[in-house]
Length: 230
Image (tube, rainbow, N blue to C red; front, side, top):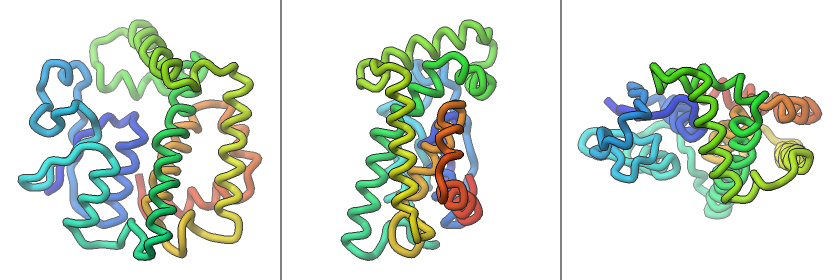
């Protein structure tokens, strides 16, 4: 049995859950207690303290991308990495776009803009029981603001962040024009990476509005949900 160690609020954990479900693998979920991470409780499964992580028999893997490649190599089920070298490279590039660009937009909009953070706060509170919500909110605002400002997106004016996200969603819409999946004729890791970040973006009212202007993204999301539930 595979054990997934996760923060339920993480889009990267969603990516891994979808991969496990798509491959029809049995797994159990262990919700990581955030307060215990700094105490070293999870170092046996994630020495880097990065989550998600999995324990698969005697093997432990952390980092969502590495987990998916491990599942691809160690287990059967429908493939998530295209067989075509070019398509595999394209899936890799799109996943990187999701993980390294869309991620910081969802962090900025979902967790540093107070009116959007309120919608996500209850889920974060589950992994930090006993912390008053006003303290938790202040902590999230402080830590994520520092992170996104250091990366760069968090230093942009809000209207520019919204315009950037609208442009990203238009690009996603264009990639899906005339095809069911982002790469080739089957669901791939690219689809799982992007939908996980888009779902996190949906906590932001501004992103919901932008998403409503697309033509094919919602239908694609429905297809991914059916093939690889979160």
